[in-house]
Image 1 (cartoon, rainbow, N blue to C red):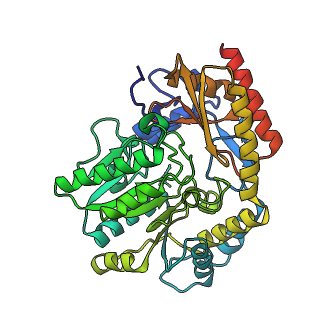
Image 2: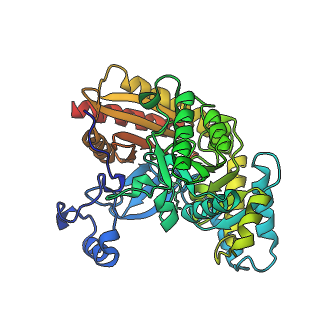
Length: 442
Ligand SMILES: Cc1ncc(COP(=O)(O)O)c(C=O)c1O
């Protein structure tokens, strides 16, 4: 029997009730953290790490330990990338203001960004976080369709605002999203059998039909095209197309949440949805967009945005400021200049092959899924999801100075997403450490 669905934020997190003050590496800092953050404090690892600097794919802790970062998809072009640092420094020294003035840096960025989107006219609203980008996309979809019904996947996470929490089943520790939100199983073979495309599309169609039967008009299908918090389900590429058609047939708009797969991570073009050959009605981005400088975007068709703006004004004080635009532009320069999409494809394939090899013959390792440098590895005991084993593997990798997280409905999937400049030797180091950890745990 599978275990209970898990609260991912709580997995392998420091727990003040269970983990004593001796868990800390940095005297006093943990108490200050608890006093400052209160109940909202979430720290990785039962023995939290104090980080002091990072470069490329490496992060250095206060005690001098250097970790390989296989967790963090925000500094996607590499921690502290000199080109991004310099772009921020130079623009910050000249002008940083809001978008109610004309500014060529911001317009230049948006023009580059639009050129990366599917054909046709787009408008782009810049903001600071993925949550804001999704909140606006949902509101635009609701105005443009006159509907309220939203379909998401079962363990989706789309943000921390009021509306985005409603469409994020993963965030609910108690209770559930409202009746206007329907969650369907993530597109896995376990849920839908071999015909993932057909099964997922049928589930989406059923969910919209159920909403309509309750008098709730469809507004949006909101999907992260690698289904990251659901457990990483990128394949077979193309499987999303029938679900997109089903959503449109129901009268909903399709929002591609590219906060996780966007900006080259899948190694197959700039966007995760591109692997599926679909053109969404809206695209939202965040995290890796400016390599850690807060920057996010909602790209919408002009007529949909106009419908929203007839009813509401929208202004975002920090969104699209020239420093963010300069950072975002530097990120695009680095992705192109350093061939990071190609690197994600090449090193990601090597990493996946290595993990498959390490997994062969070890019944504790289930499926290895992945596209480019976004991978998921299931950990099992007697064929059933084992989140406790995932935590032990995460700790075993930490002991080998590699950081990685977990995801999925049961929290038994290792979530592997290092910065895109990952080298072959760094990928090999991960594979070796994964094998050693498993051997140690047997
Ligand atoms: C798929 C997805 N969408 C949206 C968000 C929210 O982004 P942010 O934390 O920048 O608000 C996240 C954050 O983890 C995410 O993974």
